[in-house]
Amino acid sequence: MSEATLPPALETAPPVQKRRRASVLAYLLHRSPLAVLLVAIFVILSIFGPWLAPHSMTDTNLSAVLQGPSPAYWLGTDTLGRDVLSRLLGSTGVAAQAFLIVVLMGGVIGTALGLVAGGLGGLIDLVVSRVIEILQGFPTILVAIVVVALLNPSLTNAMLAVGLGAVPDFARVARSVAIQLREREFIQAARGLGAGELRILWSEVLPNILGPLIIIASFDGAQAIMWEAALSFLGLGVQPPAPSFGSMLREAQSYLSIQPSLAIVTGVAVSAIVLGLNLLGDALGDFYDLAGR
Amino acid sequence: MAIYMLGRIIGGLLTLLCVSALAFFATALAPGNPAAVLLGNMATPERVAAITKLMGLDQPLPMRYAVWLRETLQGNLGTSNLSFRPVNDLVLAALPATLELAIASLVLAVVIAIPLGLVLAQRRDRWWTRPISGIVTLGISVPGFWVGLLLIVLFSVTLKLLPSGGFVPLGRSLSGNLRSMVLPTLTLAIYLIPSLVRFVRVTAVSVLREDYIDTARAKGVGPTAILLRHVAPNTLITTITYIGLQLGVLISGAIVVEIIFAIPGLGRLGLNAVLNRDYPVIQGVVLLAAAGYVVVNLAIDLTYALIDPRVRAR
Image (tube, rainbow over all chains, first blue to last red; front, side, top):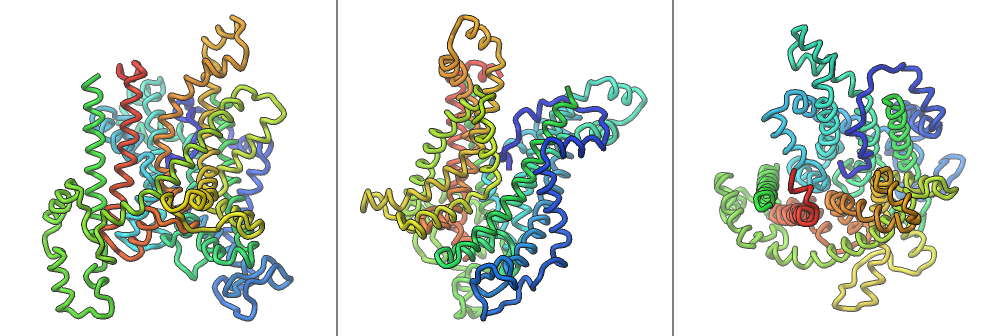
């Protein structure tokens, strides 16, 4: 997923020491209220979606197919007469799952690899750096094809492939910050007090890279949602009849000339979520940049 | 210099070897016996066993990999389990459409994105830079294949100007080919442009902070000349590397676009192969795409070493 849009300066950004938690939200609200609004809506709908949905997400109603918006179906119905709004709410939950799988997998594996490589150096660093280099930018879709060929098409399998692509992003940042911190006074002090290298990485270095890692999480999470849509669109991800942005767009394509609104509302929904996360990433980047100076 | 180049080439070959092993073992270990898939509802245990033996699937895995690798290196990618046609033929038939799509959209994207990124970097305080930056951020957040659907709604369904899918080979009709490629190329280019603009802008902004830019300004060089003679060349080198790494995005994007517009390219070949468990074709497509990725990036690195002495010193 390195193909994403990470600001190149992130790796060389100075590590941030202390900052007040409350000020992050205040800054974000001031700098990019749209990001906060969109992300808040995304979080709320992905959690409470199943309760908010006015109809079933999968029940078909063949007497009401491809309808436009109406009081009964606010956003109309699809080719099988299923309620589009309800299916969009279900898709939002799927997007949240995609986000979590990719960010957790990329974040945990990538950060651990990067910290160990940058913190310990030597042969480990050499090997890890090579692996990261190979993984980085390697076409995610090829990995997804291989993974799905090996296992089966499903949300989890598709997101494993995408998560693998997110590993280098986290690893690169964790590694470079760990290298910068290695010789800093407070690390030397901890070493002088007899703390082991792994302990130093965990309790001294890790807390100092949380800022950059959160930024990457929001960008790579946004990418994960796009990938979920793309892979499900191709039939490699979420399988019908379960709703997902990708599978909804796939079905919508066959009926573009009859009911284009189906494709339009679905695309707007997924774009709004991704836009919110990208704007949040930008704003967080500015915040940590300012705090670091 | 020679050592650097040799190192890069060996590195590239090693990557390809890893990919080949990955492609082979992942598909070979996948559940579902291709022999049974092949026979469909005519499958009996005896027939499955016979076909399995015929296809060499009863051999030990490392043995099968060695045989497969030897054949692949000789340019023989095997036979499709589905159509019984040689994978070579299938891949060669699919390649032109994919190459045309990828090259055309990459050129279009570069021609638009690089000047735009440079100008956005230099004229940061103009009234029109903010809305354009906004559009770029929006562009990054919009799924590429959705843009394709919107283009179909606009140009095919509403205006009835262009076909909504299908592919006319260049050899058959030039105008037909161009008509069938306009929307796919546009879709893929729109997908590539926003992140490229962003990259060029960020790089150009950092170049603009260099001392030699101040020197040029002090000498009285105008803003346009600074942009063209100093900023552009120094931005381009990094940008070419970035485009090489973006090749993965291009490959992924091309596959999705082929599906939307029903273009019989490598992506559609590979996807159908996955959905039908046609292992030789999956291996061929994955290997070819990976080889393209590795070779282009290797070529970029080597050219880089030739034109920029700082790289060699590293």
